[in-house]
Length: 431
Image (cartoon, rainbow, N blue to C red; front, top):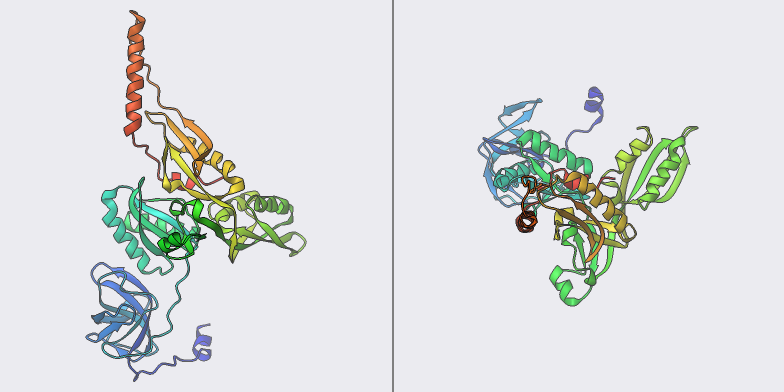
């Protein structure tokens, strides 16, 4: 294979005598040298001491060192057209090494190289530090991870329940899980990650509203940020074309599972005597949490599932809020189909009763669509028998102790903070 690459692949077409043009296609962070850019030298020569400029940020840098990877770093005196190597030039901010950027000689106008088109995130999740005192270290960790992963988008976000954090976009659920795992393993940053959601397109009405939101159609990736339902004319959700290959004996279970998730079957093909290929158009929102796990469970691990983007479709979606003791927890808000709102609300409330640890106060768990309560569960408080020490005397003494306890519980309920385990936000949406 290596010999064939040498003989069959044409050599690089760039010129070593032309002005420098280098494409940044990867980068990593070094605590002593800053951002290290991995580049392809299309034209020209770069060597330590050269002054280069970024076409993307318009910033200027002095090259400190260059080299190649073999596979470890090996410093060289220069990099010339056609070579791939690394460039260290005091990029101190992780955002400066922009993937797809063109580096060129300072003061020299060149045509930028064809950049790497950014991937569009398909899944969004809120990322918050376990404690707000860890906010600075968490921000640094997220920035460093996002440096060499151009598919990740990061915007600042805040939540009344979780404090200051970030809204992070991913290519899929696996991408999200890997990002969270790297945060913990590489940087020791324990994050609270909210349930993943998908980007919805929302069409609104009214000149004032259109002016306020900056357009007639807006993209909403956080259900808690959904505009007032009275100004919404249409909600479109992302769809996918899912392909499932399964043994024939599991076909009806698969079809039933897909139908339950609002899937529409488009194709069914017999591959051989024992396997079939099924294709369904499914809402992305229905498959990002636990669909793949369920498919594996239903088929004893024999089925495979793959999907591709299939555009957007209009749907009757509503925002389902979860309130604890009358206070809406925006991190638990989700978008559901109107026909499934009550069933999903009941399931989420029942799941929260199992997940949330019992407190000293009674907790009312409610699922709301607008101001309408569609489901409710109660999490009972720990019980303390304040009358156990009584062994006689007047009944008014017993009544007084019970009244004091009731008053104390009311006061505690007003000021109590309900602590939610970090797994709550994803586990509550699993079926």
